[in-house]
Image (tube, rainbow, N blue to C red; front, side, top):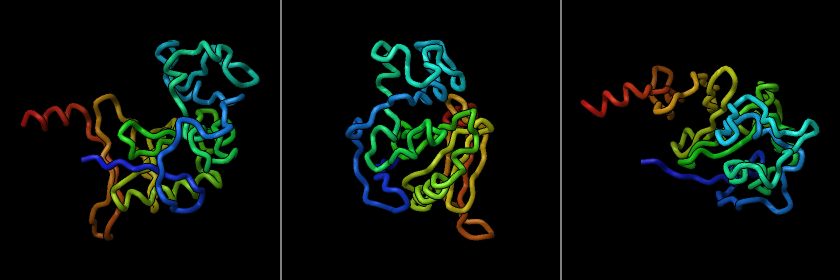
Length: 198
């Protein structure tokens, strides 16, 4: 059973949980267009890591208001949360944050031009604080970087290959010779199909 969680993004604290609005008051994309680089946009024939042909060189979208519905529907967590100040705006931070569909994974999608910005302060310490949820089994922090997928835990950052369609990411805590330790593994889609048949 998947547990859902909502995070109140109060920086450097473990604050009470609340549901984000569709957009925080007075926040707009403006010149930020990092989502136009880090995500696939099938409507535009654009792959993740490529800059959209409609991105303006000085920032923003050249077809704003006429951009595809998938682009219009997407709101990064910076837009949704009042608690995230200007340092967390994607074009400043060097990454875009979102929740995965099931709601228990905070995802950090890294700008391929700035692959290590997520490790800078104040971001890295805050991601480590948010990663405490893995110990409770109610949340996890995932960083999608050029070199693979990092599962950020309070103790270490576990690097895995990026999951493929149909793969399952398993994370949590397990007992080892060294005590309770975080784990992360990808179960390939073929193995999942075999287990279902057995």
